[in-house]
Image 1: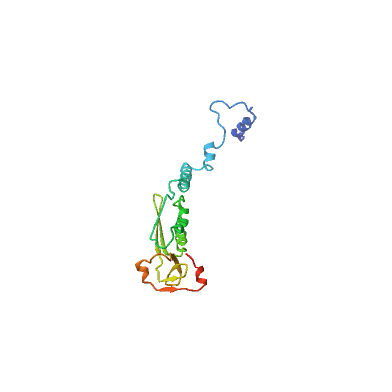
Image 2: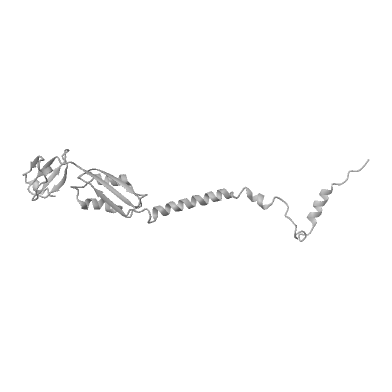
Length: 193
């Protein structure tokens, strides 16, 4: 009977383990196992993902620059349609908008602030490029004139007093035909324009 031969692979591995560490570092020597490129392939993102991430960062930086930069700022505020609303009241509300970013401008809130003024029935606010805000005001219609010893006041149909006229000035033709309420009470003298 033939005798089994010893497996040569086992002998080689035991011999390789016994070799000194200085051998095999020359040109052509390779570290056993999976190459580094394959080991890191699952851990590193692909070039497409890296480029997509850089694109998202660039888009975010552009948006921040547009909002914070001087390019989309309100530079001009104009309004029209006011007759009884004092200009100082409009400047107080609209003057704050100068320099605000167009992207951050809240036209609805600005419209609501204007509607709180006594003579304003409605307002429309439009923002457009390059940095322009336009306001169109619709004032209340005068229904009567309330006259006291110190002032003439215009009133709307709902009873709201919304504008003061000087007592010594002549009334405009469309206001002259309105009904008048003459208030001669002592307390009425405290009502001033």
